[in-house]
Length: 134
Image (cartoon, helix red, strand yellow):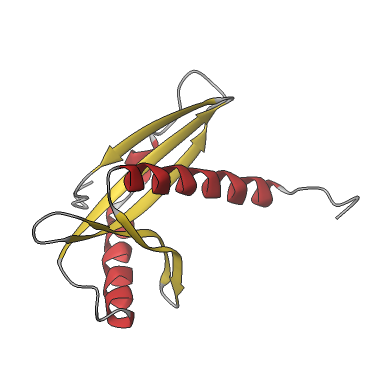
């Protein structure tokens, strides 16, 4: 819309969407199937739900953290921002998602991905198996 300024929240949403898109593309390159993106329920939102083609197939619930690098180092690395409370929330959300998708079964794992955007560069980090031990 002409004359409408983008807010800081709009910029954060756009940055988050960019990070989620980059992660989705990467895991598809690994041969994974995306089952859901930005799935919402009354408990919150799951960034990405995917199926890893392992034996047996694994349902992977992926939390994506995207940051813009303005300085040499970030105060807190993105994956370190995932707290025990957040991991518990992911478990609750995964249970709700599986209740809504009874045909999607398999082993379950909780992963995290970080994308750091620095001008035209993108850094990607992936952590398998969040344990909530922080």
